[in-house]
Image (cartoon, rainbow over all chains, first blue to last red; front, side, top):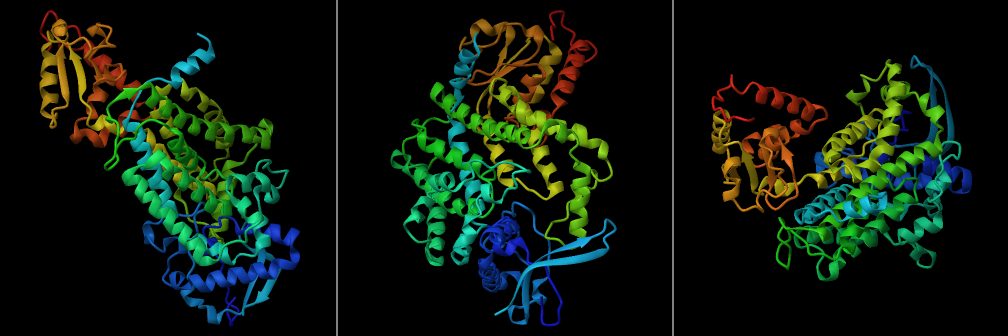
Length: 117
Length: 433
């Protein structure tokens, strides 16, 4: 989440080669709940370190081979991170959003969040 | 013949040495491609507690069992037991391990396994070590199972290599039982991969539940998630599935069958080409639920018989048939690299019997061909198709000739042409095809 509360999804590609950060989130929450902030720190560090690639519209797996790179095991969505430089980020959170079948927003359940350093 | 005798016979069925070199090139290229698109140094920053997300710990037992995805087994085979006593490495160490691995893969692609094939062992150890981080963060082994098993097999194979720069090596066109064993083992790795996945499907979900598995619904959910901004890619393959729930039952039945029946591929190897297309279809199908098995798709290239592009082809045709003669004359024009050894069936006694070994002598069945020195036995449409391998101008059509149902159609058309040979210019009374 940016200073102006604008949000962007934290793509799995940012922590590539980790394919399933959601499984890691679930495991840490269940078994090491006191370490969830450390996990969010890890996501923050990875974002900062890889922002150079992200702001160009590329994903970190493309760091050598560019667009010809081997894609992720679960193909990634496209997000414009150029508008989300690390210094403008206010908060990072793990949440689940619920929608109706007609794509109407119902609610968001936040399971963990922390302020950006 | 008992099933064990049949198995042993197939296990050592002679294969060309080209397969060994080509397999090395394909598998190591896939691994290199993967490592050049993955930066494992990110793991230096992850909290140690998060590295306990082994498959066993993250799978819901109601969804599936991951009995082997436990710490002792994963650590043992990924060499992460090292970290029972040694701390996890810092970023630069992981970076250099990956760099070393990539350099070794390039060396092995060019020069092979080296002394005692030790390069392959080192690639296996370093590769499994890096993939071990994935296995500890919620990933299964399925994405790299085939590649890593074949790397280990390359180390264990005691025969000589092919297609390497420098060093002692086999003639790629040499056939032997030892090379056949290597081919069979690679095939068994593929069979093991699919068959075990099939068994897992049966164990995880009952047959009854699979029959109710909502493939079409899942595709629609994935599309909706992507439209709502989730981290998923757009996929045109989803569109035909959406709203067609009648596909659920035949779709899941097909998935079951193609996994379980893969075991027959060991005995019926002529269906490898067809299986290639079927599994390509299956793996592209998983894109509808946002899963891509690119490594497995590329690994299937090992079964491309690369030697066929330059191996001489022995062709037996009916010399008394003017239409056949005209056809052979036309085909000869496309034999740009002088690969054909064309034999008139009437002159077979004049030729070295080894050349036509395997032919039953009945030209009425149609044109006959085989790769020089091989055990192939291609008749009619299949004989023609074998010729296409050495005619570069027709290479673009080659995959088409192996598509499911096309050979059946081809054999039918070939039979029709043979029946109507008189209308097509075959005037000789001896014309038999």
